[in-house]
Length: 111
Image (cartoon, rainbow, N blue to C red; front, side):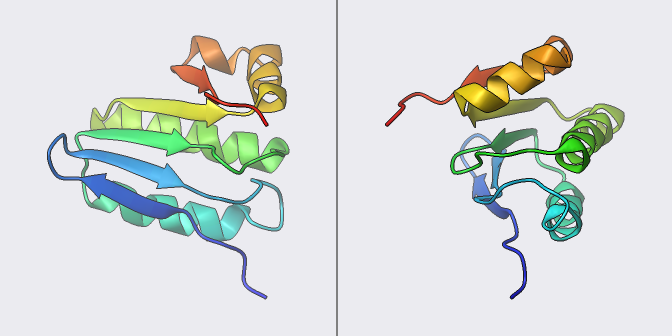
């Protein structure tokens, strides 16, 4: 079964693109997500948000993918942020000081 791919959700009013992988960013999903992220960047959004709703695990390849997306956005002059990070993911980002590189916000509701 193919891995889920991030679905871009463009917002014409603000020219914001919200990427929602909807799956864990781990070794088995990273390549499919990388291709999806690349296609999203080709549309040259004014701002890019990685929405981690539904993402409960990120491994080293997932971290590398997010850092690569951040660097690509920097190179293109596109503001980048991570939103809706589960508390466990936010702790991981803090452990590696990722929250110092880019805006990262915690998921708004925990059930």
